[in-house]
Image: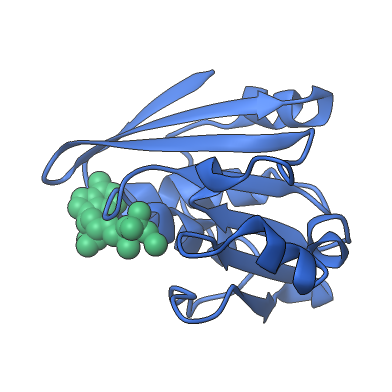
Length: 157
Ligand SMILES: Nc1ncnc2c1ncn2[C@@H]1O[C@H](COP(=O)(O)OP(=O)(O)O)[C@@H](O)[C@H]1O
Ligand SMILES: [Mg+2]
């Protein structure tokens, strides 16, 4: 497990960017943490690594899909109000196990449908602007991602 502290919104975006640039096609990132902990902010950083700028929370839909550079698709799920049966109804496998990048907010709600391998990110709110971000690679490929994530790389374009 990697533990990274963030002291601002921008730092969390930067940490997300670092995660994003180390992902492979078809990667799944699960995000856990209370309301307002920064899951959507971190998602913004991940998406930025694929050239996607305008991430908004999929509050009234199960997920948003964005097309990033090189045609890579980024699926942004928020399953706070969603039952697993609803995911099955929309054919979640096509998204979870396709070539796109999958980001799932409130992934702690996944039980039966929890993937076997994924990059687990937990965000803890320590103080108004302070977050502790815990990153764990579950499965071989994701362990390698965990290993190469660094905090202090610059955000490139
Ligand atoms: N270090 C930080 N990292 C991320 N967000 C922060 C930080 N400090 C303050 N914030 C604020 O916390 C909120 C996080 O919101 P959001 O990402 O939507 O949370 P979630 O998606 O987990 O419900 C934003 O209003 C953001 O400005
Ligand atoms: Mg959110």
